[in-house]
Amino acid sequence: QVHLEESGGGLVQAGGSLRLSCAASGSIVSIDFMGWYRQPPGLQRELVAGINSGGRTNYVDSVKGRSTISRDSAKNTVYLQMNSLEPEDTAVYYCNVRAYTRGRGTWTYWGQGTQVTVSS
Image 1 (cartoon, rainbow, N blue to C red):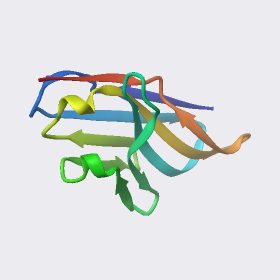
Image 2 (cartoon, rainbow, N blue to C red):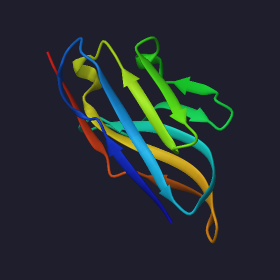
Image 3 (cartoon, rainbow, N blue to C red):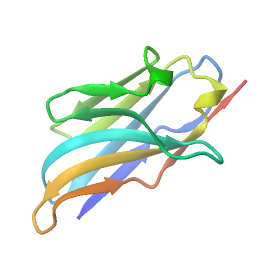
């Protein structure tokens, strides 16, 4: 129903920046929420940042002031700009989208994940 294409992960030195992108495609009627979760090695998955259809954003405390989430509604794409990266930001980052589609209604979709590694 909905396919999420993630890009932008990689290896970066501490203090560097990365921008993650996630484009949603398929029989989408509307999108309520777009966000990024991350799962560090051996830890639980957590919400990093999210943005709803009204543009309201929220961030986990550890990235506030260092990251900005934005969305291009025309392209059904969400971006996460991460600056001043720290080794603690190392994780697999997953795109998360809650969308309404014909045939399935409202459903939450996950991307396959993109690795972000921050070296000290």
